[in-house]
Length: 175
Length: 411
Image (cartoon, rainbow over all chains, first blue to last red):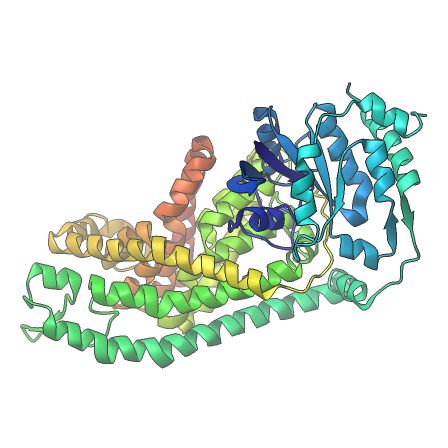
């Protein structure tokens, strides 16, 4: 199995990557730290899983070379699962990228990262409802302390493609 | 099924309404500090203070270890011991590995310090471990702190207007600062810039004008008094040629949008990991290159190539740039390692102004081989373009610096 870590710049993808694979890619607090991809390996339920740390991108419509790298990796790898890392205090735009990836037919799970910062900001997120509407696993995480990482990997097997029509129906239709 | 952008946002709106509630948010001290450091009125003085602190900590830390420890270790123990035990004094292997010595009153005399000896095991090791290692340790320690706290994006916002004048925008500060450590990651970091024009300008400018941490470290040690002038010439060159490139390179230089992340407390483990990664990389890549560079220059001296090049290029060196023809040797070393080149320059006899010119030339004349390889990886067309710019810059700017010296009456 192959898994891509995708999300906006500076949401913690590289922190996940290092935690999951024991690798050593650079982590910093600024967008654009990762501009190339790194592969690593981890084991889930005894199975070897290849994990790719993808540069951050805001959408599948790249605006710089690092984003081009990100989008190219997604399109080159058809048979993969994607962990969408979303900043829990900026959910809307994170979901934008997640929807784009779903529209391309990829199975995903969502990590709502920096959950602690969202709690500090008094942002309440109805995880169950979000899972129901999107039809994918949504896991609150704090990557730097490792919170939620186990659940995230264990729910990777639930990931399957979702029809956008279903999401629209679950959300109560478009305007 | 694929949605249009509007439909997607519409859907997200619906989802968000049903799943997210924003509670009351209180402005915290962290937010206040965050704003304080990004608003120009307060942010610019703070940025200057941060850079100054960076600079003085860098200088005193590196100086403490180099002058207080390594100079003594290498000059008082390592050099005399090697001169003693290494066989075949005066032979070619001895000359290259340990000490090229000098001729005084018709007699061969040994060097008394590790800069003058020019040997692979003496000058090479001293430059790599005694001078550059402390410099990069402190540089990357402080860089990691700035990165992890989240200061870099704020610096980018503050310097945005200035960098627009040279076709870039604030975020170009990231490749620029990374290049101050080593140009190689700096070149890769140009990928965060949006257009080809911006990437080309950035890559060219950093390859030419940004001295790497190793070079700054050695300058700090061997020519501390002249370093201010050298950096000033490089910074001025960065902006002059950036301005010109912006005018002549076709393409767009768009505005940038950036997420300024909140300040975060840096995690010790991450800082340690990053600094350690740099040190490990230094031992694996940089040290072999320094030793190899010292060896190659040593051999070229021995077989007379450097003397030949110096004589052949003397009109250019002496006439156009106003530096001694012996500068040819260090310029060859500079292709492998700039730090080694500066160390070799420092023992050539010349005036202060010639030294300033020579070190600026070493910085701008050609990127080191590692940077060269990385630029090639990013695109050979860009590399060729950058090399063309470089050739023009070396002659124009080198000549200009000479001219300024003549006008000031110091060259």
